[in-house]
Image (cartoon, rainbow, N blue to C red):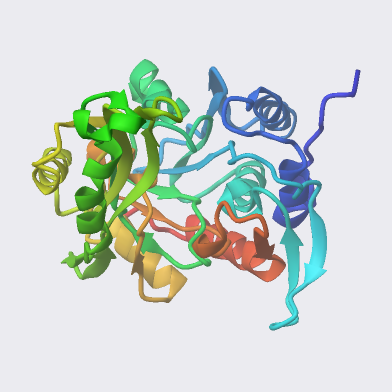
Length: 368
């Protein structure tokens, strides 16, 4: 039996990124990495009160500060595809040192920054709640963060939250919402030699897919940031046998909607778009989050980072914090365009600069 992996946060976020990525943790298989993070906290961070809920960990300072900031990241990744263990490369275009492999972008470099700083920052200017959680890359009802928030609501009280999702080391405010719907049409079975006796359900979806292909996504400005929407087919099912006219065909669509729309409004939009289908079933829905940049702590964080914020086009767990009334932003190393790609890679310098920006901000007096 292989020994349990050991993490050493004192080596800093770059080496910690390598260590974390080399612990496989595809969604549903986070136990080993959660065990390693918990062991590192209990060994190196006696100043933190650690609570575990399944494979989610919450570690808090209790310094009696005026303000509390929550900083969170997910431990799981999408499936591995011959891209572990990680390797070090030099980018051909920029000449920058990179760490290449699954999870480097989404989002173990961000997790490494958080874990290194959680151990290092014993006397921050605000109280801190560090969170590492399971099941982010799957349906929202499986989320370890959502489960822990329901089971331990008092642990998640905060004045501001930061998600370490990849954002190229700049702030991305809020996030789009995401909805998945199954669109179905019916037909009538018949022998394919006498097709006129039936109604081909696969043929019937053609008009719906043509309409979807012609869809032009909106760009919507919310609190000064421009969000891009999207409506796309992501899966299709139909057919009975090679000699049977199919009586049913369904396809799944994913709608990414601006945070100015509620979840109910997004669902109504999709139902209306496919109004001539026989059935539209909403199978997954997670609302977006407005940028939250008008909060005092958010404004101080923007000033500290020193770059204009962008909108987060993907869905992230800033939405869960926003639903609790906690303004939240995304801030982490890695190019979000490389998230889930087989050639995921993160610049070493971006890991270091993200850690430095967070460290400097949290150690300054930002509590008032």
